[in-house]
Image (cartoon, rainbow, N blue to C red; front, side, top):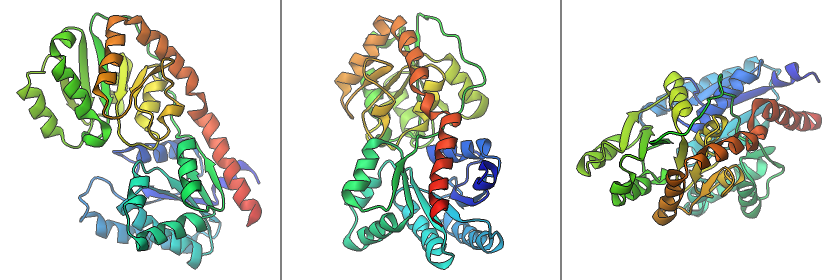
Length: 360
């Protein structure tokens, strides 16, 4: 079956990807950009409050059913999901696609806290999760670690690893050593992403970092709390909150920064890290989720254990005391990233669909 007509048989469902605020939206946006016959129904707006998203979901549900009724070419429903409320919304979509319309269902798990959600749920919810995972026609996960989690806890019919897709930047930045290194954090401002671990390291070593390091923080979440910490501890010369960034502003930050940091406590495979690597940046992060498969300790960055402020400090000092290290490790980032570009990911997804449609 030709590739063009093959993608006409798949309907993707997930959070809206225009002006997205999250990794899942970024992945879906890249699919839209790189698949000419991309078909999509949004199940979650993403920028509303939880309560406001309830009517949005029901409107989306009618649209979803309408598309499945109207377009008889659709044979695969590719569901992008995570944990908590996302799971329950996607479970309803799974039941409709699988048992009402008889479609092959792909469940693409992006959830960084899916294991926490599952292990912390009661018996009834665990049965729903097991039913979903075991009866979907294909589970797509983001890393070997997540592949092991699903195999150890469930009995999926078929499971494959698919790398999170990332696009080449329009221009590859030319980097030079600078007297003050720019450290970039992009992500949700909250405990899970480890931002407070990082800021506390800077507070405790303010004299050492002053005049040597500048931390730029971009993202949404607990921004007022972060700004209060910056003011309380007089960190204005070292830490700057730049707000939610996207488009040209994000490109500028990734192009002009020297190091990217994301000391998360839980992750799937952060698109922000992949984007930073595509801009030839070295990474400081944690070996959670699939991060350890792209960030290689002492190769293209440093891996620190979640919450380990001593290791964060040592990693930052290594770059501050030897700025050329950031240039060398950044070049290795771009080489490691090759399997995550569209020319590798899209054909791999195509092969998964071929496998499913061969059985239909």
